[in-house]
Every structure is written in C-alpha cells, then in structure tokens.
Image 1 (cartoon, chains in turn orange, yellow):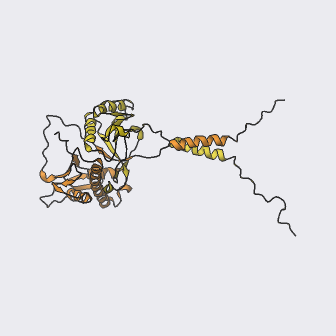
Image 2 (cartoon, rainbow over the protein chains, first blue to last red; image 1 turned 90 degrees about the vertical axis):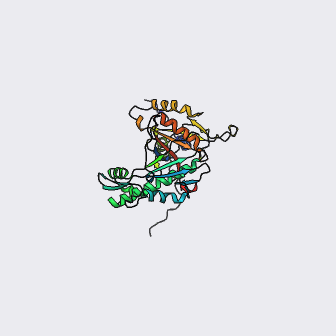
Image 3 (cartoon, rainbow over the protein chains, first blue to last red; image 1 turned 60 degrees about the vertical axis):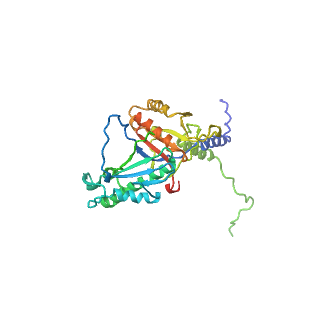
Amino acid sequence: MARKTPEINSSSQADIAFLLLCFFLMTTSMDVDYGITRRLPPPVEQNDEEVKVKERNVMNVMVNKSDRLLVNGRPMDLSLLKDEAKRFMTPRPNDDTAPEVETKTFDLVGDVLMSKGVISLQNDRGTSYAMYISVQNELARAFNEMKEDLAWRKFHKHLDQLNEDQTKAINEAVPVRISEAEPVVY
Amino acid sequence: MGKFRKEGKKEVPQVSTSSLPDIVYMLIFFFMITTTMRDVELKVKNAMPKATEIQKLEHKSLVSSIYIGPPRDAKLGTESRIQLDDAFARPADIADWIQKERDSRNEADRPLMTTALKVHKDTRMGVVTDVKQELRKVSAFRITYTTLKGSALEN
C-alpha cells in the first residue's frame, strides 16, 4: 500500500502572495505621459533663400527674456493671446489688414475658406520654459477652438466625437500654422 | 409548537479565508501587467509646467526622454543641465544618443520615434533651444513637450 503523502500546508501561500503584491504595488507607476506634440522643421541650409512672407500674413509673437509677451511689437497679456490668435487666423476676405485668404477643397468637409496667416513664435534664450509652454498652449488652444468650430459647422459634432476620417479632414482644413523663428546667434 | 430557535452554539461561523490567496493573486497579476519599472534615476529636478491642449503619448516604447532641469545635487549649482539616460550630458552628446536609441528599435518603428522633452519649468529656453537644434540636425523631428494637466495661465 502506498504511503500517504502529508498534505502541504498552504496557509503561508497568502503571505507570500501578499509580499509579491506589495512589491508590485510599490514599483508600479501608472502615470501616463501627456504633452504638447510638435514637429520640428528640417534644418535650414546655408544657401537656402529666405522665404518671403507678406507682412500682413504674419503675426509676430515674441517672448522676451523677462517673460513679457509682445504681439506685433505691442505688449499683451497672456490671457488675451488665444483670442488674438484666433481673430488673426479667422479668414476675413474683405479686410486689407488681415491675412490673405484662399479657398481649398478637402474630402468630407468640402470647400473651406482658409487664411494664409502664419503665427511666428520667437523666444529669447532667457525666456523661462514655463512661459514658453504657456504661450504654446494658448496658441494651440486657438487652433483647437477653430477646429472645434469647423467640426460643429460641418458635422454637427464635437471634435472628440468625430471618427478617424473626419478628424483627419478637420486637421487638414485647419493646419496648425505656428512657425518657430530660427534662433538668433548674437 | 415548533421549535424555531436552536439551542446551544450562537457563534458566527468563521469566514473562510481559503479564497484569499486567489484574490491576492488576481491583484498581483493586475499589477504585474500594468507595472513599468522606472528606467532612469533622475539627477535633475523635474517639476514640469502645466498645459491644457495636451495629447496622450501613445506607444511608450517609441518614446525616448530627455530630462532638463537644475541638478538635484545642490553642489552642482542651479544652472539647468541635460540628462540622457542616467548621466548628465552636453548638447553635443544628443546626436550619438539619438543614434543609439534608433539602433535599439525596429527598423519599421524608427520613423515613429518621438523625443519627449521633460523640462523643469524654471529652465531658461536657451538650453532647450540648443537641444532642439541638435534634434533637428539628426532629423529627430517628432518631439513632445511633456507637461502636467492644468491651466497654463497659472504657470
């Protein structure tokens, strides 16, 4: 007759499992990174000709070394920047001082009157990063609101309710036209 | 007359704990799957500014992070420094580091690689601009300024 093997005491199993649990609880980090995504322009070649842009098509946003915001040379409060950028980028065909406009056709959204305006962002080496991010964020907010407006006009939906193709179409119809000035070498 | 009340023991029976290990194991598996070990030891302070217009960083395996901020070690001063992996670096080291990061990824994934700039909010833009210029030189165009969630007007 085979001898009975005594049953293994499993009462400590819970303790072992708890130990492991504690370890993973401590090491886990569920923080998901969020950020403002941008695309850098390719480096400029020495012999590249400067692209001429008409003055009325450019909105100059400058942040100086003491974190002061200057829009087209005039000081402006950060809280007003979003509306100013939105006003600048909104096509106004009958206004000579506003950027030029053109009509382009896109899939799904059809004909869209687009502004040729560019927002030129320039910062000093002494600008603080927090201020720079704030300015980037406000400009991004202006574009996102314009996308939201267009999404509502064309699809009667909010931006986050659109499907993939519609989002793509909106992104094409409202390009984020922020150009960062080449750093100046003193 | 029926007898409704049993006499004798009135104690509540003990709760069976035999399923406790199972529950705990379930939790363990959850944390095992969601866990990601912190891969670098921060040598710089990393209080990031806040922003609202932010996107979630997809595909963490395609993101390489550059940390910029004042050193934690007060002896090294307060000037912002660049940290690549586990060591301080100069802007000139970025090209090699990007190349190394590229080599460690699949060929198909390389165009989708993103560089996350995790910059302390008190950093001056000078060093950030230098880093961006280096990234442009090596064609690492996709960048993201990692931020916290919150109103940017409070920065």
